[in-house]
Image 1 (cartoon, one colour):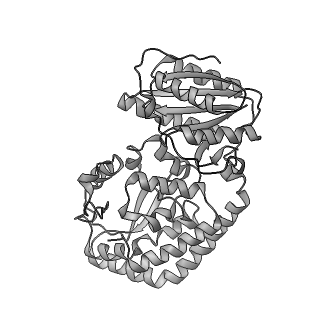
Image 2: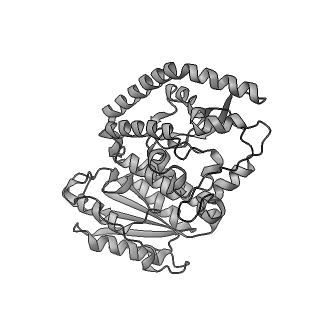
Image 3: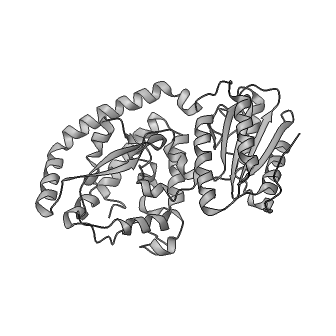
Length: 386
């Protein structure tokens, strides 16, 4: 096993490599790239997108970023029992902040944020020692440093002609995704027809009680980071400063919960309830979730789904860590989702992201149906909407 690692960076305690529990029987794990055994294995394109984002984060924070590349000899792809063991070992050894990618030809790459070369070396030895596969060729580089880009370029050249598969969660469910889209179209049309009288009354109320457009249009970030115009009934005054929300979101994402909790220690509420920008009618339509109804047009246009992660505002993702971005990679954003029915304003941002990742990992049509049913119950109770 050969290793190359820069020596210009300091050390990191091995204890920083948190251990997660195994969430599946190794023999039941789908080991093609995708969401396997509780750990996210990205396709090459998705991994490279994450890598570039993480490099920019490292540039801003000046924190170390390590790249570990492992070539498991004698295997051309994720299609045998040995790789089931590897994926199980990954779930034991990686943190939620780590990024794992299958680059092709048996090559697996790891991005380890906030990890220097010594910690990456400990990590790679841990992975190799736990696997029962033939010895892996391991190379390590830490950013910033020329060896980081050199290792990446050499690895991509090595696997450049190999077949790189799409994430298995998309490939194996391609027909079901077509059904999901058909449900989105049929459901949004039906809901628009049924809700049209209520939407008309809401539009009139918004127009008569405050100056400005009835529909609020805002750019949001959708699947694979693509921006799109997002529609809501306007619930705020037009002459407002978004600085209040920018600061709130920054504190929420960065985990400064004591500064934003509008509940108490036992029952926290992470929601900007005291927002003076909201109009009187706006508070009513928000509490009843009526402001969300125009997003049915986003669903019809294919920019959103009825169920999926909520689409963020561009300035929100400026504060994202790389693992947060995974919630935007494989599915369309949704009007409702697992967070809306299981957490809502009572959860931290990291907990919300984990719920989104759990939804993506376990997605099925039946799960969508259950979320839609629970959403109706949440809306009727106005739970967490104020």
